[in-house]
Length: 421
Ligand SMILES: *[C@@H]1O[C@H](CO)[C@@H](O)[C@H](O)[C@H]1NC(C)=O
Ligand SMILES: *[C@@H]1O[C@H](CO)[C@@H](O)[C@H](O)[C@H]1NC(C)=O
Ligand SMILES: *[C@@H]1O[C@H](CO)[C@@H](O)[C@H](O)[C@H]1NC(C)=O
Ligand SMILES: *[C@@H]1O[C@H](CO)[C@@H](O)[C@H](O)[C@H]1NC(C)=O
Ligand SMILES: *[C@@H]1O[C@H](CO)[C@@H](O)[C@H](O)[C@H]1NC(C)=O
Image (tube, rainbow, N blue to C red; front, side, top):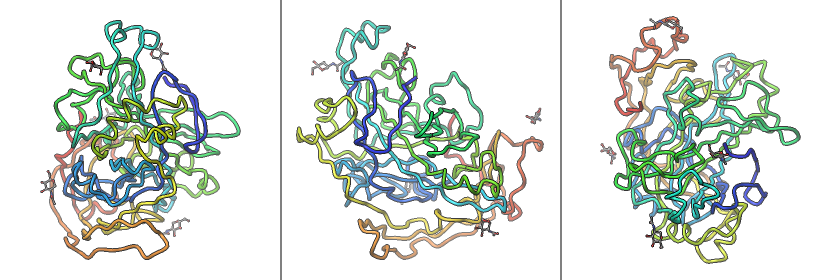
């Protein structure tokens, strides 16, 4: 497991294996917070809210070409118009309402530049040959983590890839596999590693995961030793720093004072934490960075800027106007999509109400001017379809959580989009 370390921002030093080329970038801002997921739920309103980072040409459907055509990006490297997204965190009040927790995301792209015998002595063949990192191909996309999980298998690399740090900048920060059941004086950091071994053929797969694999000895450790996944990609490690400590004074007014936070999909434990990546790097830039941006052992990318590989501008901002016409931030009566809060098992319901879609979607860089808003292109819909639900609580009323109010309206929809095993 990686050494514990924490930082606030790009220029604070941190320690990591110096043999690995990597850089670190703190997103300049969150592009938008909406129920959009063009990988798992393309073309439709997604099941839960995501914080989204990256290129402004993000939408219900996207391609690498779309992202490359973005007017701006919320990533400090303007050549990176990729999209990165993760579930939004909320605080649940005892009266059943939710307030969004502010998240500040940091992305670390690690390049397994030089694989030498000292680091990877277990794999002599590989260590004998310098490992070359391949840039993400066009339209490459992936999902790390599983939104349906409510249990923990410690032997699973995919689950080891998700961790939470209970931050205490004046004391000791502690790592957990679930949301910490204690006050975290400096906030909570959710962390996720993406797989970095690729089959070399498919840019996606039905579950958005089976075209990629984790390294051989752990989510952050090893080589691409599996012959089915021989191509080494840069490894993305994404951290979201949640300003959860602002809620500590209100814990007694929480639905569950011990652990009052819940992700947008209704998970109050954290095992379902996940993140998505859609490649939107400008053609050739990542390729060059993987060859030459190996110049600072602490992840400071300014030496890559000095070499002319890419630019870095931490002052720029980039926002996307509302596409799914509903509130996702602030205090809300229910989680968007009416997701019930469910621990230990889950049932998937869709709200019978689908918000309107607005278009055009507009990029903007200044929050001091009125946010641009499109007009309704697809009206809101109320449906009442009786279908069997999907989930691990099904057929076990002892596990079934409190019946949420909206269920009285009778919308149970089977989602065939998620084929996660
Ligand atoms: C990588 O895995 C090896 C073998 O399990 C272990 O000895 C080593 O400490 C790990 N390195 C890191 C950085 O976790
Ligand atoms: C979005 O993608 C889905 C799945 O590929 C497709 O069915 C749908 O028509 C697309 N929607 C739009 C608006 O392009
Ligand atoms: C629920 O409690 C929160 C926090 O006290 C408050 O802001 C909100 O207005 C309440 N909502 C309702 C519907 O009572
Ligand atoms: C690694 O790069 C070297 C030099 O560019 C090249 O000759 C070699 O074929 C590459 N090896 C792999 C496994 O891609
Ligand atoms: C329902 O869940 C409880 C608690 O985990 C378990 O003991 C019981 O066997 C389950 N029943 C069925 C029918 O799955």
